[in-house]
Image 1: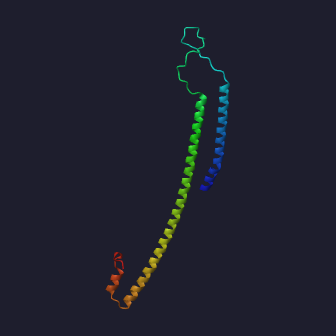
Image 2 (image 1 turned 30 degrees about the vertical axis):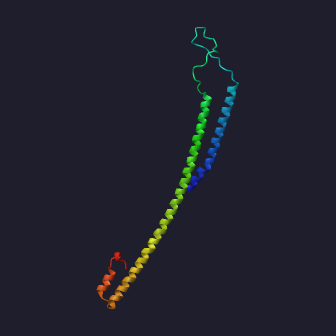
Image 3 (image 1 turned 135 degrees about the vertical axis):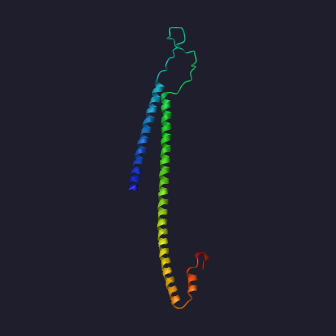
Amino acid sequence: MVRMRMSSRLDEAPIRRKSSNQLLMNRNQEIESLKEKLKNSRPIDKVDLTSSSDGDSVVEDRPCKRRRTKSNLAIALEQSHQMVKVKQEANQQAATAQADLEVARREKQDVEEDLEDANILVTQQAVATDVWQGRFDELFELARAAGVDGKILSEIRYRPLSNGV
């Protein structure tokens, strides 16, 4: 079920990229056409509102004291470039996250397999220990029946594991 969701998301990714690329191309074409219109437009005459004349005089001799601000077109272009960068970074982060997720899933699967193997090994060890304990009990009873000293048998049977042999 998880793989089906992932594959459908992966199948949608090229469609999203195509639509984003198409949108970007349309925006770039629009920007280029606006630049052409701006080049072909006639300049706007400046009017000096501070003079005492009739107010319609054209000021050509005075330099503009205000700093020219960016046009709306330039701002829109910057914003579109910034959006493209953000989208590219988001796509890279998503791809990195997807790769990290796949690595984590593989590692989880490996750990689960190792745990299953360890559980099987522990079960086998418990069975082997039970078998050896049963055999030791049989030998203990046979030795006692054969007349071996009970004190020696008890020392062997109840010897702490920390003593080793």
